[in-house]
Image 1 (cartoon, rainbow, N blue to C red):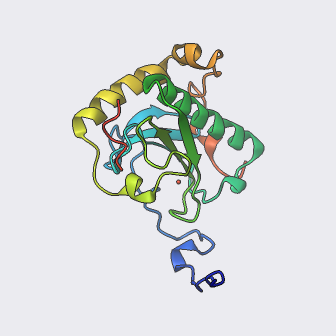
Image 2: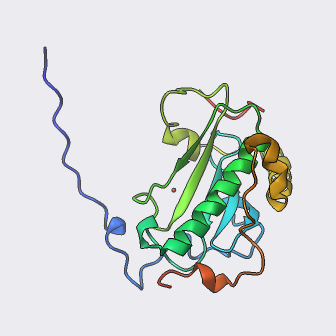
Length: 201
C-alpha cells in the first residue's frame, strides 16, 4: 500500500508578505460610502466594518463584512475594543442572514487572512440543498459565476431591514444584540488606538 504523498513545496506570493505603508490594497481603494462597490451591495455601514451582499459565486446570501477603519491585515492587529466592535457587527450580519434565509442548517464564518490581506469576514449560509454539508463550501462556489441580480436586489432590501432593526432577529436567537452603529466616530475603528447553492430560497 503506497504511503502518504509528500507535501508539495510552495512559495508564498509577494502580496502575502508583511504589509507596508505604501502597499496597494484592493479593498482600501473601494469607496466605503457608496451603496454599491461593484463586488457587493451595502447592507449596513457600521462603526468598524461594512456588511455587503456579495455578487460573486453561487451561494445565495453570501455576505462579506469588511473592516473600514484604515488598512488592517489581520484580526490580531486589533485592540480589544476594536475586536469586540468588529465581531459584534459580524454577528449582527449573521443573525440577519439566519432570520432571512430560514430554515438554514448552518452558517460558516471565515476569516481567510492569506487571501486578500485586508481584514474581512465571509458569512456563508449553508442552505438545505448545499453540497458537502459536512465540509466547508468549495471556493469555486464563492468565487465563480455571478449571483442573479434580481435575487441580489430583493435579498439586499430584506437584509437591510433586518439590520436596521436588531429586534427583528429576536425570534431566531431569543436575544438581541446591542446596536453596533449609531453616532460613533469613524475614527473609533482605526487600528492602533475573508453542486450549486443558489436556488434554495
